[in-house]
Image (cartoon, rainbow, N blue to C red; front, top):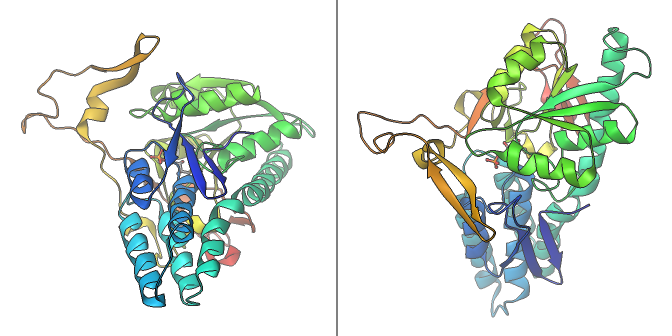
Length: 367
Ligand code: MRU
């Protein structure tokens, strides 16, 4: 299993996801600013992965610095947390992980802070395996119980964006659930949305399915309604960037339309994520900050191969689009799926579903 982040004796290397799938290149992260830039420019992306990189960069900084006083140590930790928090706005995992580091800083013990910072990364894979197992078992039970598959039958499932080893420290969340179904011999085929305009599906999820030899099928975002209405998939599973306490979930743009179709055609829609994706301060999803991406990403196709060593962006839209106030671009990076469209929120601690005809899902029961 490969991982988006390699951490060895305080050396940090990340896969440059901007170059995938054409090249598998690693970038050296040698400072907190390197980590901020890698997150902000999306050399690394995916909520758990960016939280891990942020805290590992703090561990690295502390390890490499001799502090003359506790005040200096604590002020460095605080500054680093404040700065890294600004790298990207929607995924709450970053804020949760940095808060854990701030908590550890209350001990004023450098080693305790380093240990906590490393824990965010090192615990990720086992956490992902637990939630993936929870999700796979819940879905199998649900589909068998409702007679949507035969006992022991296989499942075809749709996912959005990339939630695999590239988006985490390994195994993945919604992607992990698909991997688990495959390991259990219960996966027919995984369908994944291209996820325009950044193409996390076409570039990254595709790459991971090839690496793992999991049967897969690329679906254009515009074909999701067609796919679900055809009855080809029996379920949808996605990751999360921020889950409110009532189950409302922010995830990659396009997630909500998959949920609407799943709901219309009565197939389960699951959200699979770590507890760190839950925003304990949010009752519902209305005030989740949504990152607006640059118009450039919507009017160009990136990564077109010019020759073996060169990738270029090709402009699809007329040059006025995004450059002229008369012709603007709407390009949010995420949308918020209301809890009423979600069948189950799956965390490493268990599965929460709506109860008593409520349209909300009580996620706090799993925290
Ligand atoms: O903009 P990205 O690529 O960072 O968005 C990623 C997603 O929306 C993922 O679905 C989410 O972070 C969960 S990753 C396990």
